[in-house]
Length: 120
Image (cartoon, rainbow, N blue to C red):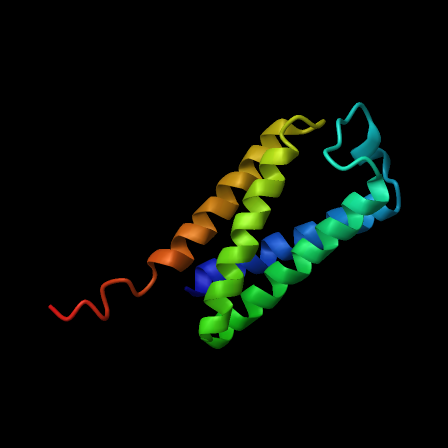
């Protein structure tokens, strides 16, 4: 669970950095890129909000809270959807790598402790 929490924190930091870059209208995000959201400013705020959700989930997971598992799954799922929506951009392999990491983190959070309460 600690590994999933650290990876979720890493995803949150990356999303906050990308959101700040989108707010700053960085050239990396506008060169020949098709955006799902029509405005780069809107995309920046949505990405920052997603990063904050992932950071909250990661820190709560490190604390061992059940709230962290719920927020972690939500943050990982939303991150995976966001990565899939950006595959058509300038860096499709990076988006696929972020998607795979989000799916891996979400899977790790969901299956953690699955057999502990099975009662065998």
